[in-house]
Image 1 (cartoon, rainbow, N blue to C red):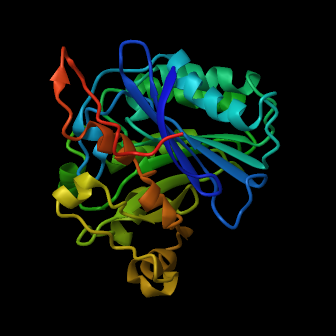
Image 2 (cartoon, helix red, strand yellow):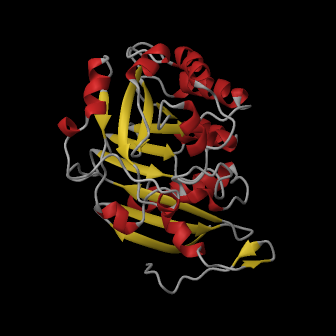
Length: 317
């Protein structure tokens, strides 16, 4: 893999674009969460597809799709970022989180499972916590069954984070936001009951919350027990696609938890609720999902089934 561009701030986030054989691009990120130092928590975000076929209303990665990276190509992203900071592969971070959530829906690529099986043996990383965030696409039951087996074999003791992307409890609006066949809440809840083990991390229900997208506690309680699930609410990232779709974030960086009635209502329903607001510099860096690579291919002309790239307007290393 050849690194063709990078951008960012060392103490916040760094975005990389790597070109693999065949000319396909992979975008990956390393980040910290100031004021938490890297020794406490270091987060890597890797791409699991070349683009994404889903086309979510808020994600720039859905603008094109060129197939599935191999196990080796996913591992290359991780290894580049690890060796850049820890050449010997000894990672002294209390939490070393790898999110398979950059470009692409991870459940559409079985190579993600192969990576998860190999990761524990690749580095000395006692704090390793892989994270899978999924919209639960239909027809991928075998992926989720094997994921459960891998979690049981390699990642017990709080060393795995599983997350469903929900975004709204209105089924029709959810289908508009994520326009593919996917599990409904009943199917998600059935898998969650199988996946969760008492004493392990709760399953996260993520809402990148846009204005006008309802979150109804009664609907949540009908399917998702507060004993098994926690809720994470994040801003809707200011991506190109979100702006084109007319979406704006319900969460404002200048406000606190007490300013959000939806958070109060969910907590009154018994849920643990996390309001997660990233560093504002990440928007300027372009480390939001699929955003940086989008800047590079915007206005690119197709050439022989691929793309030409216009990089001169961007600063790299």
